[in-house]
Image (cartoon, rainbow, N blue to C red; front, side, top):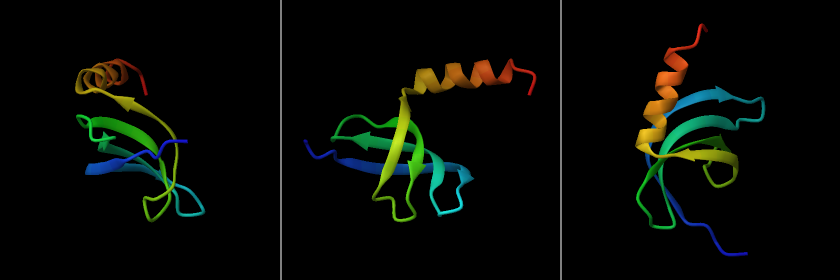
Length: 73
């Protein structure tokens, strides 16, 4: 299995924290030296291990914002 390289360029915010210290975060991440994208996933406290997540371009993040703003939450 190929090694995945990543660099967290900006920690935008923590959405939640689990009982074992893992946090669900929105970050701006460069994966494998590519252009950075917004990313929502769970991270261990040292940001070494990660869970499955979703990666969004800036345009997709704006669309998600618009969808959420239109919801009655």
